[in-house]
Amino acid sequence: MSGIRKKTVEMVGVYILVFACFCSYNGSVCSAEHAGVAGGSCRAAIGRAKAGKSRRGFAETTWMFRRQISMEQDLTEKAISSETIYNGKIVTLNVDKVELPNGRTATREVVRTRDSVAVVPVTRDDKVVLVRQYRYAGGEELLEIPAGRIDPGESPRAAAQRELLEETGCTCAELKKIAGFYIAVGFATEFMHLYAGTVDHIGEACPDDDEFVRTELMPVSQIPEILAKQEIRDVKTLAGLLHLSWMLGLSPVSSCACSICRA
Image (cartoon, rainbow, N blue to C red; front, side, top):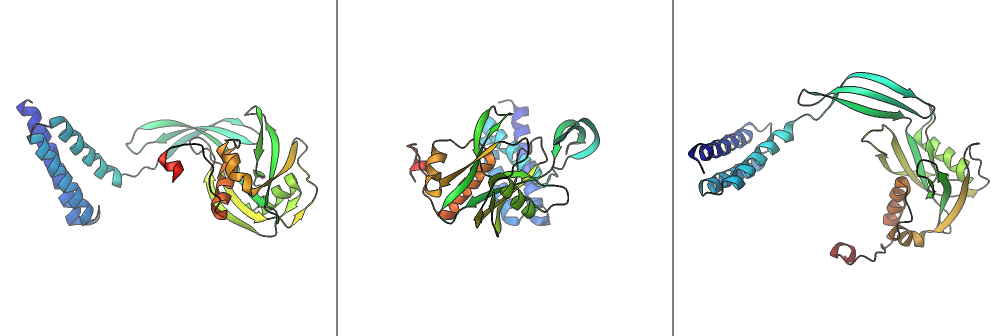
């Protein structure tokens, strides 16, 4: 290795070591313990560089430097402008210009829509109430938990009770929120509220005019098997049934021979 390159490696390592020591003294960037670990790693990397393992030492010191910086970096992207490309009944498509954390600009295509709800309804004889319907976007029939969008001015809990009644004819006097998550946060704003409840009444479903659904009851004991067979292809239903399995302590079913699945 050339003398110039070797000197560069050592200087980078020393710089990060000084930075870690500063963090330890200052206390506002990271804890003393963390800075000590960083300093020790940097010193070890410098030693390896001096011993001739230049590439590995340089890579490690660079990684430590980036790690220290990234821990404090604000990752927020700031909106600069927004243009509406499409405004439909359900979704609005915007193309936004944003400022990145490093000061550069980028374009973000965002699907804006109302938030939604989903319910995992379980009857008193331990059966999950599901709905089967054809999903045009996916091109197939899917078995799902009842779900729908929140109307303007409606609370998530009220929306969950309404959608459950409309799609299945069932009611749950009490609903427990078990999770909340973004459906496709990479490009969409939709946030879903997931509930579970015990069915206290089963009546007639009253879906919307353009909805054609069929109610199906599935024993909770079959959840591990149907999940293992990958018959559930809807993400909210996967989340709901997996959470129900966890709450009931149901053992997973798997034909996989790996150590994780056998545990």
